[in-house]
Length: 323
Image (cartoon, rainbow, N blue to C red; front, side, top):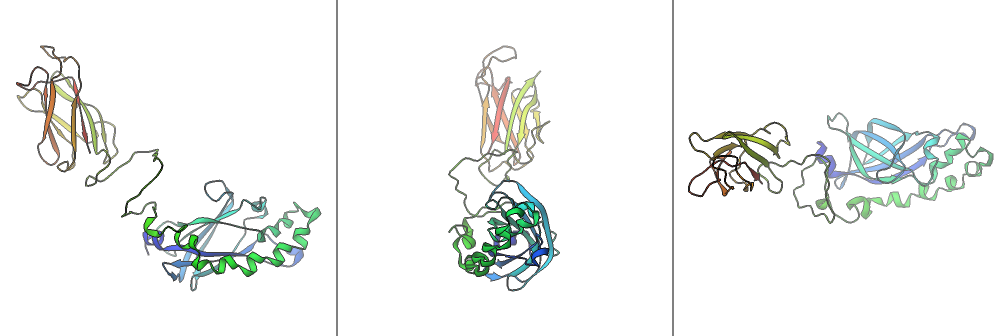
């Protein structure tokens, strides 16, 4: 099964934690963790690689304790069970322990996929605190273990056993899977965000899609020779050198340049703009305008005027944007 299908179809529908009980004087920090995993609407079956981490918040935050890998775990009718031991220090703050689970089919070359959201680990495992002697002088909670013995949430597991129909587990708070946005997976529907979007890196987009800038270039002339002064290739995210573009002056035609962008621009939006400034060519006159034509699928011809509209002439610089 591909990672894409895991992202679309696998999700935890129930989680329940059972304390690993041993003799009172030999109690360890390990506890049994049981859960149920669905593939779509059907229970998952087979062997899977699982990974468990603890965090101090439900999102973001800091990892607590080690990362525990459980490869080749058997799932029968969606149910799995394993023993976890993050150490007693992992449970120093009973109200801030959340477990994160990642999964992939055993033997799959894909990376592990995180199943969200994280689940809070509640009272039962915290009876293990007595083994760290943090409360050894007043170990009522560990000796009597009222919460652990009764363990209403764990033994009855009302929330866990009925989680197969839990709205939040099945549909992320009532939003069906058609409305989810997933990383590294193509989303075929529209994405509507009420807030802003900030990207720390470059944004790219295929040339057959609309929205982002595909190319930006500033062209200047030195002794009638056109040069790329600045550029950005929105397809390859290059902003150095010539960004994969090439430019030549039309032979014998002053003020006519050919810019080859190296990808199909025939169905793109093209904007050209001339810098308004006194020209550096003789006679020195203001730039009077600019226009263009799409010469072929990858090339734009640019015509600049610094003297009059009667004929083309080089100008100081101009800018081209392609969307």
